Image 1 (cartoon, helix red, strand yellow):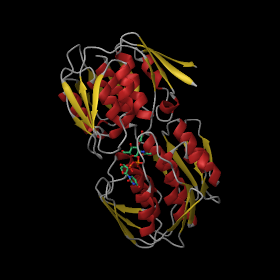
Image 2 (cartoon, rainbow, N blue to C red):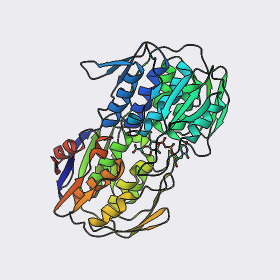
Image 3 (tube, rainbow, N blue to C red):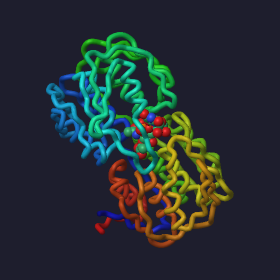
Image 4 (cartoon, rainbow, N blue to C red):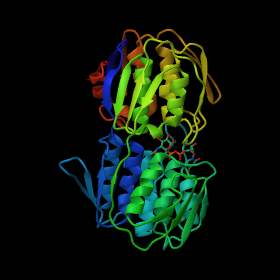
Length: 419
Ligand code: EPU
């Protein structure tokens, strides 16, 4: 198992380029199941999760290759199998994204029910209830959700809470259903806009892109699409926070600043300088203090839960006390105990963490518990005096491509070692 070793106290300075978004690549890869032909996806990040999704697609019959320039070509003329096995689903919950496309294409889908995960119970009842509203029948059999649908039919689907992958699954089913589907209280994350662009490119008819009401008019036939994955806003935000925490100056290229409204606002209030262009962000903090600011996670365009842990790492160094409230997942404070090992002063009160800022952190051995928690430990380790060793970084590899290499090129002293 690999670990990261960080010698803290170096400023993050220079330029970094971000990769394509994991959480856009996963649904767009799943969408290739919907229509025969050769789909072309540009800017797919090379991550453990995207590799898992490609293995899953291959198990259904999709054949894929990389063009010399890096774009993925995926041929889904033959989609025969419809079972997503426990072995793959247990390593990646987003495997559930094949449920909608398989039901739409084959009228059948068997997907292992994902278990709980480090950040919460994370049920898939919204997915199955929405697909049932479109006419699918579900059984639970040996830990598998077994769905059947002769022909999906449009209907109204309402989400109690806007679910990102839930909205994506219903969209992918509705584009092939008979008649019109209206999704109310749909999630509005930019990754959903990317999926809508792909589906539209395949011939789907969808109105309401960017809003919480989506109207889909089903079509009988879809064809292959060619689309580019949007930049990863969470990777971008992670680098912004690393630069801010270390008092550095970093230009992040190839990103989408318009997808990070809440983080940019909060960083400015914390006293960090943020400049932006169409596809770049410059973050600078020249030795001035960080001011404590409160944050509450919310569905987009609110503050992303996927940046909560990294923002907390910054707040451990702020002047004053900040309250960080997690409203999306019930157990997303696993990083708190590890940040405390580095000397952070944090207490948990229900869904809120109260962070009393300190002058500095001290290096220690810590353990990664989930993907974004790992990123917060990297940020804390970059700042801490002395050496920080982070074990179980396979979590990090699920969602960040070459994080330590990118940071090392921007001044960090960080290396990967085998334990
Ligand atoms: N929920 C239910 N029932 C459902 C679905 C969701 O109760 O059937 C609840 C969840 O438990 C949660 C809330 O609804 O409390 C919202 O969850 P959502 O469904 O939006 O989460 P998700 O689609 O499973 C995606 C991202 C996550 C990200 C969340 C929230 C992908 C592949 N995953 O998950 O990303 O945290 O949206 O923005 O898009 C990550 O990248 O580290 C990550 C965890």
